[in-house]
Amino acid sequence: MIYKKNTSLGGKWAKGSELMEVKQAKIVSETNPQPSQFTNKDGSPKEQDVCRVQFQGQNEPLNVSLNRATINGLVDAFGEDSKKWQGQILNVETEKVRVAGKAVVALYLIPVGYQRVDDENGYSVIIKQGEKPEVLPPLEEQPF
View 1 (cartoon, rainbow, N blue to C red):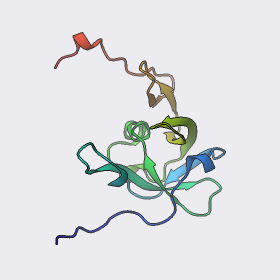
View 2 (cartoon, helix red, strand yellow):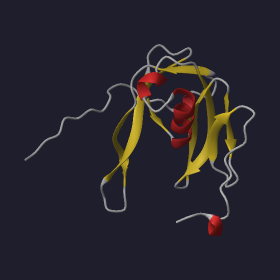
View 3 (cartoon, rainbow, N blue to C red):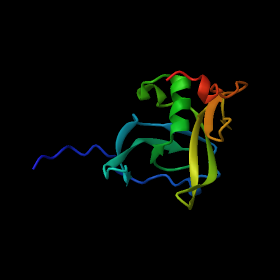
């Protein structure tokens, strides 16, 4: 039997529903992929990007699975290396959403000077304040 080292973070996980009043936070660890509780169509575990976040008013950092909008905003603001995301002041925004029919609270970590908006297809994106979401050309005009 071959075993791989488990690199998942220990500790408590953030719950968006418990952070609706929190305004700011800082990432305090590097962000790393780890298996999630969800599976791909082939049965293999999906990956989630997890880091530890210190939320304003909380006693200890919590584990957070970063969503794609948050990651894209962090990359735009601080670069691709997640080590550079640590220690930055981030605004916290929550939103009630449905995932697979279940009501949950999505958590967004937004760099100062950025905002969360919906793109033309209704997806959340994090962009610099004053900018407009990228608009893709019609499908028939996109190169394949």
